[in-house]
Every structure is written in C-alpha cells, then in structure tokens.
Length: 267
Image 1 (cartoon, rainbow, N blue to C red):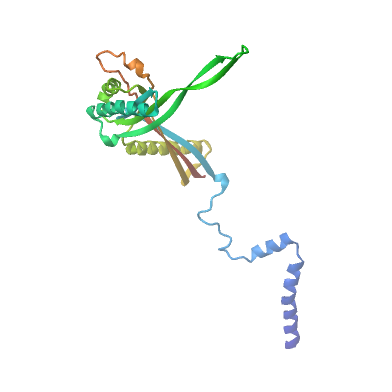
Image 2 (image 1 turned 90 degrees about the vertical axis):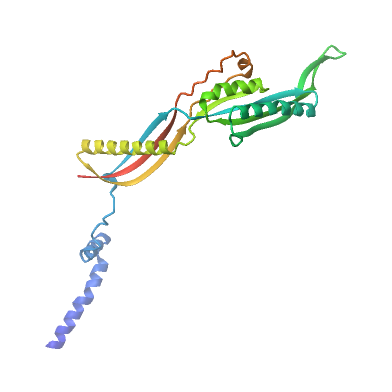
C-alpha cells in the first residue's frame, strides 16, 4: 500500500505546473503574486506617486544702488590717408587715457573695446555725353576709430570723468552701464527669498487641497543679473557743458533669483 500512495502524490505535484501553464496570463500572474515574498510586495520607501507631487516656481528680485559704472568712449578721426587717420586717432586717444588716469581710473580697469580703420567713399553722379547720369564711388578718406571701456569705481566722480574725456579729445561716447562690483551676497539673498516663497506657495496649495507638505523631492534654480538699462549720450552735446560736471544718476540695479521645486504631499 505504501508504494501506490507515493505514486499518487508524485502525480499531483507534477500536474500543478501543467495546470498553471494552461491558465490565462492574468490568472497566472495573480497566482504568482500569491506566492511572491512579502518583501517583493512592499513599495520602496523613496518611491513617489505622480498624483502626490506638486511643482512650484518662485522668484525674488532684490534691487540696490550700484557701486560701479562702465563707460565706453573714444575717438573717431578722418583723414585723407590711412596713416594720417591712425596717427590722428592715436594722438587723441593718448589724451583720453591721460584723462582716465587723472580721474583715478586704474589701468586694470581700462580695456580697448574697439579699434577700426576703414575707407569712406562719396557717391557722385556725373553727366554723360548722351545726357544720362552715372553714379560712381570715389574715395573720400579714411576713418580710424578707437574705443575703450573703463570701469569707474567712484561714482561721485563719474560726471567729471565723462567731461574730462571729452575735453581731452574724446569725440565718441557710447553710454554708461551701472552694475555691482560684487553681487555674490545679493544673489544668495535673492535665492533664499525665492526658496522661502516656493515653500510658502506649496504649503498654501497643500492646505487648500486638504493635504500637507511631506518633503522636497527636487530643486532647480537659475538667476538673472539685471543691470540698469544703458544710458546713451552724444559727445557733441557734452561739449556744450557748463562748469558743473555732467549730472548722472545711477538708479538701482537688481538680481533676480528663480527656483523650481517639487514637493511631495501627503494626507
């Protein structure tokens, strides 16, 4: 009796895989899940479901008075020959450098920003024998231009510095740009405020939804330094200045920090 009982048990065990193989896929998967280990059925503690997240964008802008200014000025001279034009601009440019040095601008704060030499042509129409007109270009001379960008650290002397450039021979003036010499601390302050704004927004949305903020999932940031718009002036206008220096107002410059934060929300 013992031997037939063993054969019957072996037959039942062998039949189980065959029965599973004949099940539909969904039924087989369900059966497999029933025998899976408890660890495989437990969700990862760091997994995030899309419906439990909230993306927030926030920014903060801080404006302060500038502490430096960049001015771009120089000379443009026209002469009959290229060598004469270059010699004329060099002589006038030496006066510009001397004026900047006298105004207290350090050599490291002066940089050549443009140097050019090009021919200038006049367009002339001549009458032909048949009565028609013919236009042609004729060389009128050569134009030499030299410009520098100077960083002025003492804004109290900015107007007087601009005047001295014109008096010393400078006849081109592109404009003034105000900035901060070191904006690192201001950027960090703007970043911190932007992050606080993002958290406040997330908590507001969570309360309105009957949820609460559990944690921050991701943070991405970007900042944009926003200097004061450039002010332009024509050199010939500055030449008519009175004894008082040219008035210049620095206004404010600012730093804008923006952050994008993903929050996890829970009940």
